[in-house]
Length: 155
Image (cartoon, rainbow, N blue to C red; front, side, top):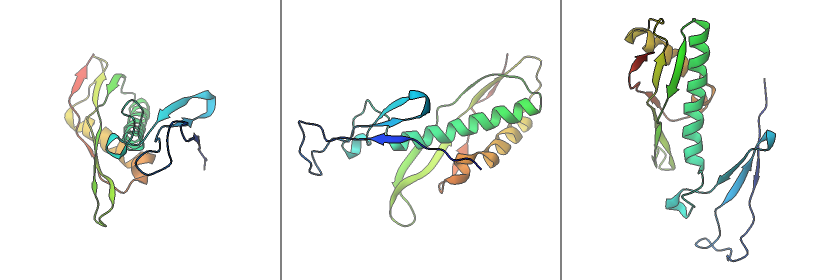
């Protein structure tokens, strides 16, 4: 077992009133090692479009976990990966209970394998299936996560 955390900091901006329509949504996420992520709510909720919002962070975390799990599985199988790019998206909508939620996430990974690494469509599908089943973040989410590989490239 391991435990993970962060620090979040928010202060009312000096030029703002604290009402629903006027308070600032900008805040910071502080992580170990001194990493600071400027965050806000989504634009539709009064947030700053230049900052990361929690919905984007969940989608990125899911894609990042899938990437890392995929790489670990490929390495254990001695399938040399040269690069991995993804452009994940998520849909914010009403869930079955009528609450606003991320109702689906779609990953679109493009993986480049070394020229001497034979990977066919079935092998790629099995790698992504295993990565999905073993992804800590996907296993923590209530919404479906779809994996739609763009294609395989050999180096």
